[in-house]
Image 1 (cartoon, rainbow over the protein chains, first blue to last red):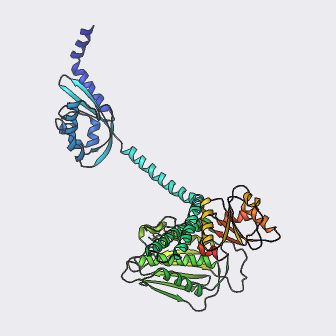
Image 2 (image 1 turned 45 degrees about the horizontal axis):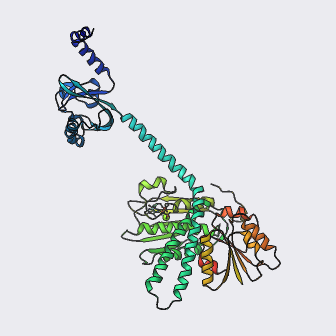
Image 3 (image 1 turned 120 degrees about the horizontal axis):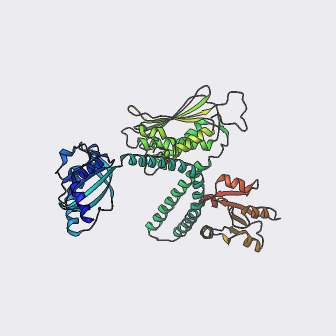
Length: 390
Length: 112
Ligand SMILES: Nc1ncnc2c1ncn2[C@@H]1O[C@H](COP(=O)(O)OP(=O)(O)OP(=O)(O)O)[C@@H](O)[C@H]1O
Ligand SMILES: [Mg+2]
């Protein structure tokens, strides 16, 4: 029986070889067979499509031509290592690797390698699947996921922010009170080393900074309804200028105020309006820091329906890539900023039935931010509870 | 003239007592409203600093009780919660002073 069987094999050798080739060539995956010196013996149709070489071109050549340079350099070593030690790194395991097309482009493939002992010696069979499509899907999925995370992050900020602010407030409160107590104690000790007091001061400052971050997060999370009262805009803007110039110790930025005559009283929440203006001025002052000429100008004017407070600076303008998401939370480009300033400011403006808009500037000037607040028409009584018009 | 501190967070409570002692006040601390009620009621010249978010009996209940005393001490409420949460907690009741955490020394001392 056995003899019959082997006989039929040998007589049909050419038939089966033809059959093998047709099987190989209808395979969707790329199939390459190489000998123990990494020379290509067999290379199917799918490979021609995958790599751009024809079978005649590659037959007898080293498989390295199908690999990017960094793999190719190490391939001889890998083969030798396996032949010497028998230690399997890829055979029977399969993994994702990069392949190289004739035109030089690299693409990801899934490669499985098998081994066969033949009369002509050891041979290795590589089966390769193009996974570009899968990779593209994975990438799209990851992008969608990132967007989702971003969206839920903003929603979660409402709840998380409140919870975190509350939890962090306890230890922060304790830290600040302890520091203030020790500072008082230290002040009473004569001849105490100066560094002692200065380190406490610095620590208090850092704790206060942390608490300011929490308070700003809280402002954003809470968005309380405005407490409206008559506001004298020129006076309010003057206070804003004084406030921010405290932060500009070097006085290198030229701050100016230009208020149109005869502005009517505004019916608004002065604290919130001041918050917006100070936010805008801080941003402007940071923007001009590296400019050759440093100026920030605040102006107030009116239209028929609105009072407009504009903050313009001599900086480089808002980078174009930031413009689309500028008023969204976490849009900032600064290492230290939270990227919340403009998001908070816009929501405060809208709480007042107004809006905050930007002219990003750029080539020939800095950014201009305009805060537009609705004016009451003369004779109209201040409404107790005005529905937001926006 | 004692300042009664009713605060469940031991760090905040201890730090407050330490700071107030360092500016010369006499203090007493309580981890919750229940242990505050066990002691002699505060006098007119005393001050009660109470955290709104106490476990068990709330800060509000404590404030109401204090406001019902014949000789009312001054009440300073403190809270680390959001203003909205505080509003719903207070539900119309008002402490003499409401301070939000993190507490600043000046804000606190100006009311004592
Ligand atoms: N006047 C301006 N000129 C140029 N770029 C600006 C100007 N104002 C804002 N930007 C850009 O917009 C970004 C967002 O500003 P936003 O005030 O929202 O956040 P931030 O200043 O980074 O952080 P913070 O939360 O501390 O305010 C800034 O990081 C900055 O890159
Ligand atoms: Mg900012």
